[in-house]
Length: 239
Image 1 (cartoon, rainbow, N blue to C red):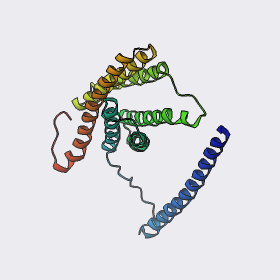
Image 2: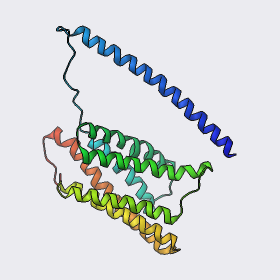
Image 3: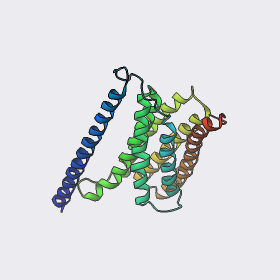
Image 4: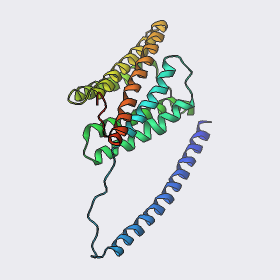
């Protein structure tokens, strides 16, 4: 059965690679024609030297983080069960969208934003992989102890990112401060699970859920403020 599943997986990846190659070749062809058209229509016969201006990617990254975090922590708080809805959001919006935002931040020379969005985008992709890979039968699911250390490491990283926000605005401090607390509560929950303290584990999971909801609210506010602020030419509180 494992060989069969692995064969299907390899076949799927190969088909994905061929489709990607075909798409990239087409994209490259369009790009080359566009450049040739620009050069041809340039009256001076010179290449255009102006750089493309990139928009602010932070609202995209913040919304990818906020909305996915909200949906997961509504589950942690006990509102509904985990499902493919959370996994799909984790892969595409919490994961890929944040990665895109982070790469644009790096392109603009913004180290903090780039590290944050690429890291948390990768966190969501890794978390979804942790959920999905054991279902293939190729690798075992992590126990509570392993997940505890996984979340502890992310909490440690987030704490140092929080230290970085102390030179930034209040809303960033609120986002990273509550996120640090969230990782700490989730790590403790898993360590308690490893110790067999099921009742305490459930309590900490609910506490983490509500902390995550608050954290998502701060991030959502930050994103909306950055979208609307230039439109209405108004600075939002805490930003």
